[in-house]
Amino acid sequence: MTARKVITGASIVALLTVGLVTVVLDDSDPAQAASSCAAPAGVAVGPAPAGGVAGFDAEQMKNAQAIMNAAKSLGLPVAAQLIGIQTAIGESTLRVVDYGDGAGPDSRGLFQQRANGAWGSYADRMDPTISATNFFKALQRVEGWETLEPTVAIHRAQRNADPNHYTKFRAQATEVFKALGGESGAAVDPSGVCPAEGNQVVGDLAGKWVKPMEGAINSSGYGPRPAPPGTAGGVLANFHYGIDFVHPGGPGTIVALTDMKIVKVRNLDGLFGTGVTGQTVDGKLTIGMYHMEAGSVKVKEGDTVAAGTALGTEGATGNVTGRHLHMEFFAGALPNPMVPIDPTIDPTPIMKEKGIL
Image (cartoon, rainbow, N blue to C red):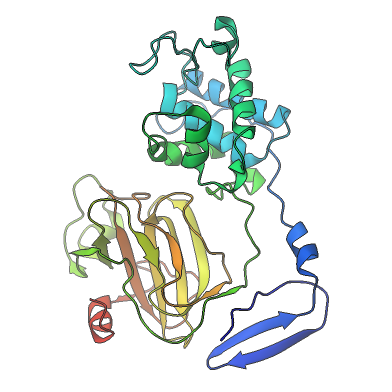
């Protein structure tokens, strides 16, 4: 089947059924539909909660406020506000520090800006608003920064020795951002990308099954087990409701096991982290795939994707001790299943029967 994009609009709509999949087609102008997608504008900054957030004190939250305000003053979207906080956490833990790290002994301030003339005077680099403004101007010079994974965009602006240095600070940055009013801007799609509309059909739907992460190792099975040390107990205290996979040597690409409709995209939930939930096109199973890298999700709610379609990157978001993919299987077509409210089923016999375990 040729992949077909669903364009929303007020035109006449036809229904075409292909096997078990219903694809919606219409005659709207794609260019017009695409133009409706715009990155949310930067949000006004709210007061910092008493006592701080996510381990950050009042001084650090005040600096985060200055970063968000600097982005808004430049007319930048919420994605930039979140990126700015993420960068400053990675550089200075949101403090205006009067010293540099080993890679840049002359680096100063929230963003560890060098004394090379590109970042202004010493006073500029030590001023939260001016240093943040200069960071955002550098970010704007990164071609296509809005469409890049946030860590990549930051690295190209900051040129850290480790290109992945900023990844681990995304979850903290999101908590700070939300606490300062970011949640009101419908902002926190951690990708920072203005996405295509949902309701697309991606790939050829053939009903096959594939491994969820090529080259990965099955690291934990379904059934009774104590909660791993370092994680919150609660519903996970005595039972593992899913099956886990780890890709050795580095994060793997997580793909759709089979043809499925994406019904839920999670962005940094406290338990699940970043992830997606899909229903098989025959309606018999709902599959959740969690703990992906923040900002890595490539699909939208409403999309129908073929087996093998990239969904995101293996990560360590949510209630975890380390990087892995956690999957949960539910019987039937559920819109937003949650353990233990909705009973899970053991994925093992199904995956073995399909030849992918």
